[in-house]
Image 1: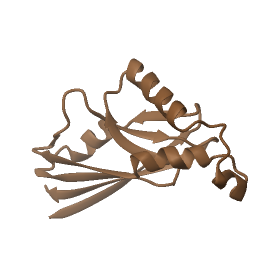
Image 2: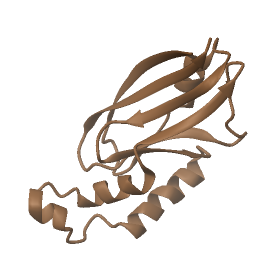
Image 3: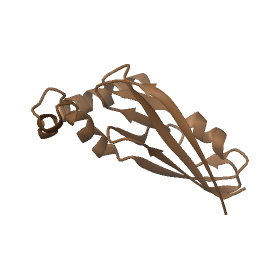
Length: 139
């Protein structure tokens, strides 16, 4: 059993909800591995990771869903406590969770045809977001 860890870094904050497809980075990482799993972990309490069909219609629908479920302009206790106006960001991220694990065999993930791994950033300002990819398996 071996372990390999890499860190992805990117800037977010271009939109209220940034959705970044990291599937290709995961596939590059597991190429050459026999079998195991890769864990994806997003640092920070205003980001999360999930699997979705990464296409423009669904991206729009997901953004609208979060805006309807957890609107930005409500009076959140977190905002009153810290004054940073991102209580909605923390709540949205808590629905996703910070990590996801995907199995693979012969260097190929077990994602379905229409599944891509995405990182979602919900914060209300630009962030340098870090995502940790950790492979545990057999080379």
